[in-house]
Length: 270
Image (cartoon, rainbow, N blue to C red):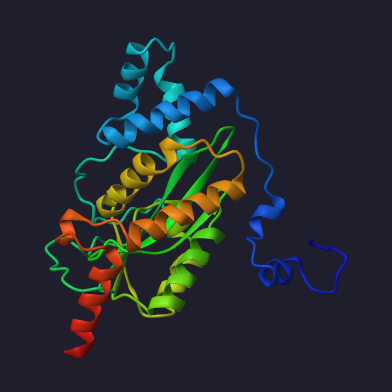
C-alpha cells in the first residue's frame, strides 16, 4: 500500500490513504498470554476501583490466587497507561520535568456545549493482544465528538481525533487533558495554540473516566475482539449508540447528542 520508492513522501502517502504514519514503523512487542490475562484483570479492577494503586491491585490479584509482585503490576499499569485517581496537591504548580499547564476548571461553571472539551487514552483488551482508544468529549453534554483506535500510543492518533472534532464541531473555549506525553507534546499543543484554545491540565480527568467505565462494561468486556479492524468497528458502533440512543440520568434522561444540540443552540441564539 505504501511505496517507499514513490516520489511522494511516506508522510504524504499516509495522509492520502488516511492512516497514521506511526503505524507503518511500529513493531509490536510479544506479550505472553499470562501477562495479557493479568492486564485484563488489572483493567477490570481499575475501572471498578479507580482509586487503587499498584500495591492494592497487587493485593487484589494475590487474593485471587495470582503470584505477582508490585513491580510487575506497576510495569503492566504503565504499559496500559493506568494510574490511580485521587486528589493531588498543587495541581496548578508547574512541573519543570515536562511542560504542563494550570488546571482551569476549578470553580468554573460549565453550562453549555463547546465550552470545555477533554480527552484521554484508555487500554482496550482483545482476544489476543490489545489496542488503545483515544476520545474527545464535550464536558457539558458527555458527547463523544471524535475517537481513534491505535495499536500504539504515538501522538498522531490523538491529533487525528482532535482535528476531526474541530472540523465537525468548531473549537472549544477550553481543552482539558491529563499530563501524558501525547498531550504535552509540541505537536498536540500547537493544534490548540494555533486556534487560541485555552489549555487546561489535570492528573485526574474524571469526566472521561466515566466514559471509559461505560465503554468497558457495556461493550469491551462483553466481547473478545479478534482483530484490530473488528475492535475499531465495534467500538465505533457502541459510541454511536452512546451518543444517539443511550439515555443518561445525569442529562435528565436525554442522549448526549440531544443535550449537546439543545445547549449549543441556546448559546448561539443568545
